[in-house]
Length: 505
Image 1 (cartoon, rainbow, N blue to C red):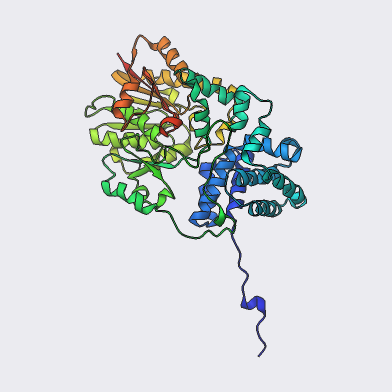
Image 2 (cartoon, rainbow, N blue to C red):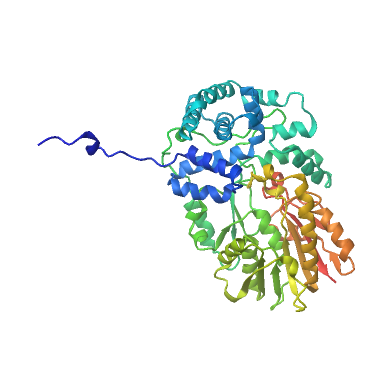
């Protein structure tokens, strides 16, 4: 009998996409298709069947690279002698990922360079492998501090900060102005640095649903894994060290991650995949930034709830704040209407609110229609979590810093005004309105409050929002005194949520 052929004895093993290839594909989709990394990356990780460790590597590589694109492009230009506009887009993305591994991750030079060259070959950029190799070796020849000196030479003011901390200059100016409104202009470097650090996942324990056992289970379910990484080079990658600079210390991780929660229903310091937590899978715990939690609780807990109250979430998608409000309403005997314009997002709201029964009703439509149908229906509490630039969540949605333009602010501000007018129309006498944005831009925050009071000061009074947030918070939220409350990531580790409370008189 003839011996079987070797290829019959040893079937060829087909490997799925590597962590680096997953990161590259998401990076390309973000730029070409305007995809959102937080929505696309989990899908690609599952499709590639990455191990937990490789999934973590792909996540850091994707988010970290997107955050630092501005800075990395300056480094690539200096190392290559070419404008990035003259480099093929896929080759540029390969090198951006390589620069992140070399300068922000403790990846050995030989591993980072060879893996980057191999990735260029894998994505079809065969003719560019020599160019990629040369540029990566030049990048590796200098320390992050030396590259900082190189790419910021001759720059000053906001232009220097924009390059050093990888934010568009107009965003730097907007954040500086928002801090200056609190007489805190000198915190700008700390704020920009916080935007560039990967935040830990934060959870909300829904009142009336989550148990002490659910909270205790978080630590056990998300214990660090010892599973070896399947990606040859990812196994040698250490945790991120941030971007070393000359005027502020580098941060390994979110420095506020292990601090006590600022939200009374918050859980922070979470690592790993939250879906592994039974309470999250069952919906009793929700992934939600603590700033969003405080914004919802500032409305629901600003005064005692009377049984039978009607609440309205005017722009409810994707449903995080609506779920927390629904839990609060269910306990107090109130009902909630969750409105969302976009059908796909309305579907997310329905999913988020599944299980609350008659407590909630999800409807679709433009929030600006409220109060114009002659029905006379009013609401005792109205949440307007308004569409905004999202400049307060640049840690979690890094692509937003590169997509938003200064002219977007004017268009969004006009929409915010119309939605505020609709909220006032349906606010019951004695009712409370919460205006919330995930942006500290003054045109979307204090500017809107001032304009609202000019339009409706005869029927509205401003509440002591800062006082309400302090009374709701589990610890000092570090908000300035006044009728509004601005949260900051560099102070308390939340998104930069803005909250303003009003009562109809």
